[in-house]
Image (tube, rainbow, N blue to C red; front, side, top):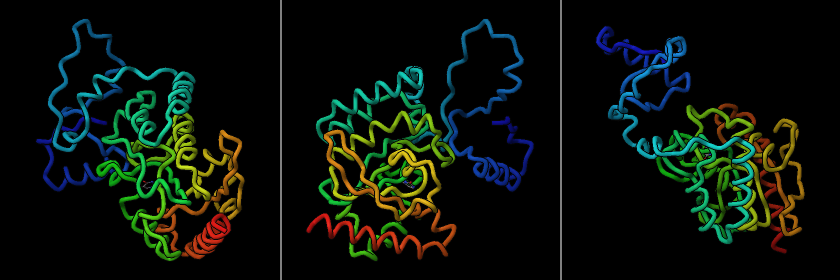
Length: 280
Ligand code: URA
C-alpha cells in the first residue's frame, strides 16, 4: 500500500482514497502504518532488529494478528499439498477434518482471513454444493454463502423446494482470498485434498459445483463454465464409488448477469432430477 499522510487530506478525500483502495482489493489493514515496499526494496538491509509491530487499526482488530505473526512461514507449495493430502486422509469424520483444516498452516490465505469457513447446512443431505471461496460476509460469520450471492442461492434452492437445512454447502477453498479475488491455482491445489475429503466424508448422492473455479478444481475440467454447466459427470470417490456431479453458474455471476438465470434454472431442474433418481 502506498503511504498516505492522513493529515494532508480532507475527510472527503480520505474517504475516496480508502474507497479506491477497497476497489483495488486492498481491504484489510494489517498495520497502523502504511509501508512503501518499493522504496524499502531499494534500501540496504537494516542492521537494527525490526521495530515492534504497532497496534492494529480498528479494521484489522478483528483479524487474528497475533496468530499472523506467530504463524510459521509456509512450506513450498509441493510440501503444502503433500501435507494437506496426508492430513485430509487421516480425518475420519467431518469434525476431525474441520479441526485438521483449522490447524493447517500451509496456505497463505489463512494469514489474512479472519476465519476458516468450513460448511453450512446438513452434512447428511443427499446434495452438496461447493462454491469457490468465502467472501467478506462469510469470513466475518464463518459460514459459506452468507452475503448477496448466498441469498440468491437460498432463493434458487427454494425454487426446487429445498432450503439450507436440507443441503450441505462448502467451498473449494476455506479461507477468504484478500479483496475477493479468485484463488490462485496454487492456493486451490493446496486446498483440494481438503474439499475432496469433505466430499468423501459427506458422501452426497449429488455434487454441484458453483462456478468455474470450483468446477475446474474439483471436476478437473479446463473448459469454461458456460460450456460445461448442466453436463452430468461421474465424480470418483477414493473408495471407488462414483457420485453424480454437475456444475452450474455461480450465484455471484448471476447477480451480475441476471439474464443467465434461465440457464441456472435449467441446471437446478436437472439437479432435482438427479436427486429423484438417486433416491429411487
Ligand atoms: N462465493 C463463494 O463461492 N462462496 C461463498 O461462500 C460466498 C461467495
